[in-house]
Length: 409
Image 1 (cartoon, helix red, strand yellow):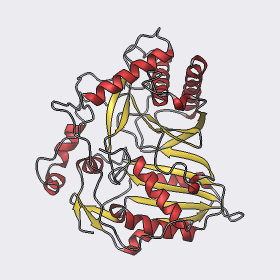
Image 2 (cartoon, one colour; image 1 turned 30 degrees about the vertical axis):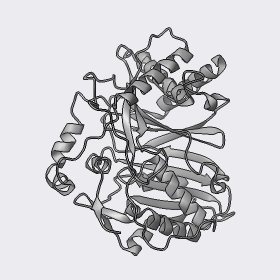
Image 3 (cartoon, rainbow, N blue to C red; image 1 turned 135 degrees about the horizontal axis):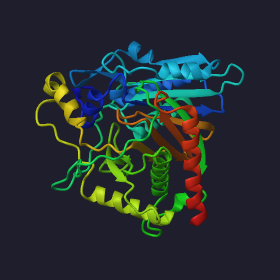
């Protein structure tokens, strides 16, 4: 596989990665069935060949192939004793893509029955959640003997991205959303998370044409309402809150491996007295308008990637962190439909968590993954800014808001 430049999205993710806010995420899958770590290692080798950038490091803004031994060391197997401490240690600090591959794993197996938890850490420069799920699916299928292993790197390019309309602007407004109220402490680089599960109860069948809003809109409104409530409880509810919402900008929704997620802002600009269903329709209208006017537009590179990486990184970071740019109050991500979600290799998954990457302006983010008829939710947060009891209150309020939509639907 010839070396090639990082895409604009990849480059942004590398340049915006910091010690305080690492730009990687993790997917935790806990299995009930027996899986051998040797088969998972073979599957990981195959996935790195099928998706070659995941067997590379980043040098001067280019993907450069790593040696086989360096890649194999990115997969480790350990016993499950002291599980949470080991996960915390594995996810701590930055994932250095200048020295090693952008996807690394640890399998925490049980000596008793062979079940365990597969923890996959992914740098955003290499993949979004959709691509990460595809990578892990291939690994698991090879491990289970359902697919033949890919023995050599394949020729593949990044996803083809949609074209934004003429005149599209990434930040069409100049005012910023209100921040989430936090404890009066400096931000830390630590990430903690709490998980819970929602039963769709028919909400997953909502459509924008038939009902005027979707299941994703329900989850978004519940987050907006929860953030507004949290700020109001702490006497800081005068300004509108908003969420930073990802948009899949592939030309074909599920084609191509890599990073193909841009962001739009959705603000709580509707009236307090609206019914929850009408708030969902207001959010659907915002999302539709943001898509149509191209708020998700990705700037094109105007000079070589290598020069930008070497000499322009400070300028890029300054531009992306400009004070008037609005990244919302917190970020939210939900993958409801994805290729392989009914694959038998995921049948025995008992627990799921998506530990997200937080922006430097955010104290928490919410990630959701729907499969097996249930939506698995993970709130990732900075424990220096929000405490465990804070997250319990936020979680409970969120769940009760979703349930209120269920009762009214």
